[in-house]
Length: 413
Image (cartoon, rainbow, N blue to C red):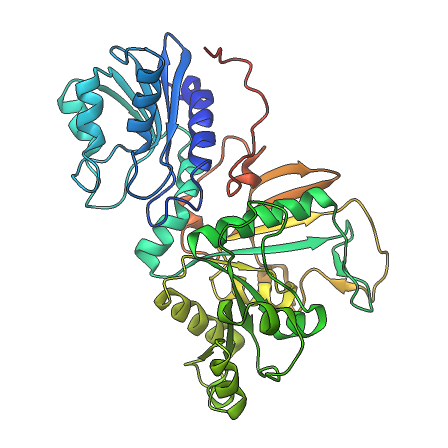
């Protein structure tokens, strides 16, 4: 049976899943919609760890409206679970509710929860799998990275002019992009704060920009992401900067072993600052030090890292296979200056075979700017993504309140 006709309701389920982004950790983000005679009559998403799964939330939405799910179709981004955890098996709940068809985006790859599709078939439920599977797999790539790769999910964010420059030749970059793009980034930071993640910059960005690395103007009062600085030298403990003055206990500095053993490191730690020492050889490439950093952030139970440290640091993350999703906010302006700071720097490829390849998984407008999302080929799950049916809107997979273009083909109750 062709799965094309289920693509539109699956997009609605994807939208539902995004509402739980960052709040479901350590569980995946999952969304579901209930259909009767081609009409979406109920919807739900997994809102928080330990709460109802998306399928159950969808059934509860139908119940609140007085709608019977018997004979309906459930469209869900991830295979219904088939195990007893903090909540019961979703497969059994769907069978009990009288659902006659279940449309699944992607199978659950975890041995503990998999098997829901087979259980549904055993009960006589019509099951169709693989609808918008690449999009649905990308939805749970953060969950799978933590579960199978034992490291945080790493996002890279950069902003540039149309000619690929991130700052003037003197280093001025505020502001290349518009207010809408900046608000989008603050939403992302806010999500990281709720999940216990961090914002990463390099030592140069820390010294030059005096960043706060907080979420501002959105979800005021919520937990803030931690601040992480990847640097070769620690700051003076008396330095008047945002991180040391305003949020020392939320700040982390990652330095070479020798720097972590200094009196300066001890003084910073006495202020509440976390100082981590690289386990890599001092003469090792930057990529090995980044691998050490990411491994230690995993040990600190930090599920997400958002790198805002510029093109050189971002490039090293990509080269190390540690960048999972790259956001580029491209403004509608031009420097036209060869000396302006480029988007990426630090390589000297001699042939086209030396190019770094990325997969475009989305593009959308943020005010006058364009927001584009890429998955580097070097990350562990890129080869399994497959081809997206459309990339329009996918750049906002990590936002919680974005929208696809209106889907006029689906009538809504």
